[in-house]
Length: 412
Image (tube, rainbow, N blue to C red; front, side):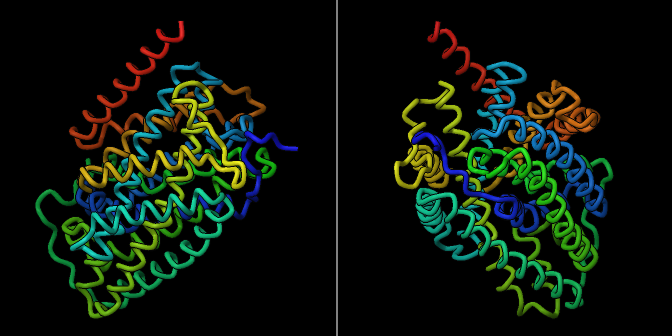
């Protein structure tokens, strides 16, 4: 019988894949493709391929580690177990901070697409509703994500039809568009979209038979999403061109608007908003579980470790996540959120890959080249981001190290 303080193992492989896909579909296709096109232009697809390769390495490292340590917390747990307390803390810190930025970005996206005049108020309302859904139990989270994922995929199918059949007149390439040197930066922006498979690992305590389920669910979700991204990116690049994609904060809607099937643009906008709801729903679940693990480990206030007696969810951590995201939405804006989040999440996965490098071969199946490539890829992509985001990320990581040092002194 499960301990009252443990979470309920309610998710099978299909549910885990759906949560992973629901976390990824939306963020990249509807938002990151714009700055990625600005960075790489006609080389956009190579940026997507590079992001997919780094994400695959990270996925396999995460899968091996999650099978060995099927607990809530993801790389916070892996880094702490394999590399030491400090590196686990830094991973957890990077994940929570980066994903809080992602939550704010997704909430803003919902508002901007559905009601631009009241984007901030609608974003806050979306956060409140989705915190309530997560509060009520992970099975409801999986069920809601399943519905949202189907709607998002249908909207993307309509988008591809409108792009390929709309006779879009692509503008001439703008200055600064089409640099091969921008491929790593484009990959870093696209990586923001692939990071959703971390939700599967952070839900390790709620997955049935995690040693079997997690290694199957992570690469399966990633592979399916990569196919979707490739189809959409090819259609957008072929029909609209990189200059049009780079010029708009809503690149796919702008591309459809420029064609003869512009009547379908409202479907694209609705799909973007619904997809963002799916991402935000899964992000809140993932961050709250990492907060639960960090509070259990003494790195966050212990009151965050409380599990609801009826719903068996980390309800205090979920409410705290919602409160912080609402504060960010109320005081901040959308610009720079994707780049900042990408930097923090790449730091998180760098720790995951370094942790996987310490595994015995029987756990990593002899493929240590993947964690090594993943570690190098994370560092390279993070360094390729705009310098402001790199500087902000470095300051935040340094602040995390300082917090750890203060706690370490207090514990002595």
